[in-house]
Image (tube, rainbow over all chains, first blue to last red; front, side, top):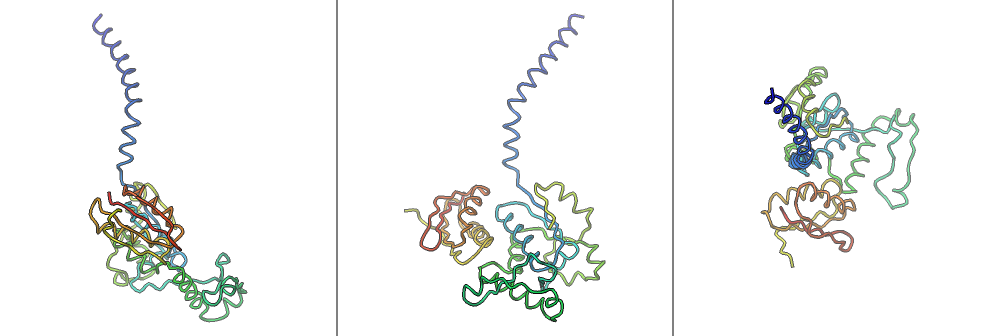
Length: 204
Length: 76
């Protein structure tokens, strides 16, 4: 009787002591685990226009440069960014946020914004081609890498380039149309666990 | 005078190229060696500091030089 009463008391005291010790020790231990863990990021790239091609590749390559583990899931129009022949276009039509400035000429000319009426943008054939080449020129003027260069840098930095198999089927693509460095052709079921484990998950 | 093992000319490059090229150059030098980077990208001031704090390499100095910046990074 006395022995079991003494044991119960010990356990209560033991638990209280353990609680205090854990309060002391755990924050430091957790901080150390946190500090030594490799940060990870997963991106879901869903757009295939030139303006939307930059964000996933810039974010992925920069994170990889910082030593993070990065995976990009290319789905829907994002799949176009994996094509061997990368030909992303952009159009200001329906894109009122896009500034229309000329990337050539004297400074006062370059600073002018040229608002285009929708009728013009929709009516003139080849307007997207013009807008695309103007945007590419603007980027090259400012020393920004091309999308192909950024994609290559991502691959060299071991960013996992994952293609959505469903999108390949639905849009009637063939795997041979895509760059050989594609890590895998999977569905959302396979990618979601990756997204769950990553520290940062972005939908682009 | 710190001995520079490798020089990287990142002038004219804009985000994210300076950092990406820095990472490639750092991979090619040995631990303890110093990489010198010249850049014109105004964002590179903060980017180099962030790069070093994230990767553990040491930012020895960051100075303005003429139209741009000069950074000295020691590989950890």
